[in-house]
Amino acid sequence: MNKELRPLPEEDAERRRIAKALSEAGFCLPGSIGDERTRCGKPNCRCKSDPPVLHGPYHHWTRKIGGRTAGRYLSDDQLDRYGSWFEQAKRIRDLLAELETLSLRIVERTEGWDPQAPPTGHRPRNTDERPPANPARQRDKQ
Ligand SMILES: [Zn+2]
Image 1 (cartoon, rainbow, N blue to C red):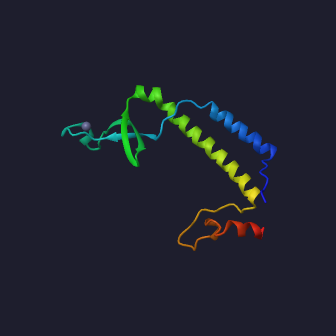
Image 2 (image 1 turned 30 degrees about the vertical axis):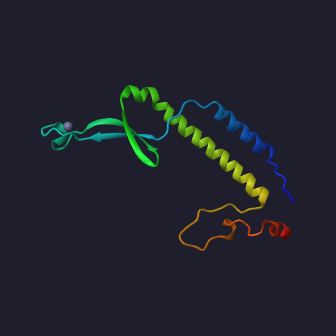
Image 3 (image 1 turned 45 degrees about the vertical axis):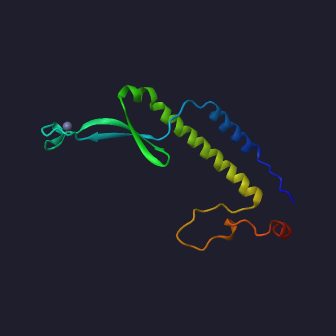
């Protein structure tokens, strides 16, 4: 028998709030900015003195491209232009996480599932992780 999917009114209001916020999202960039201080190659530079005075900070943008980390330096001007785009990306990720949490709560209630804890170590696998061997028989049991 099909279970009726019925979000509570406050859950639907929450979904609409998140969807509205997502619809107002601005441009966003992947990865993150870290400030980096470096040494150069000149032998008598201040970055080789004791104590060293390092160059920078430089704004180093790193992100994954095809599974590998790629980097690019941004000038102060470029950081001014695009810095908020990284905050936009974080805001979108946070909103998506909220929507996922909300959706999980509805699924768990509808299916009567206990909240799932993160898997740890080498414990035997929970049988719930596998699809029912015979979906038709599984239905008969309920
Ligand atoms: Zn130097």
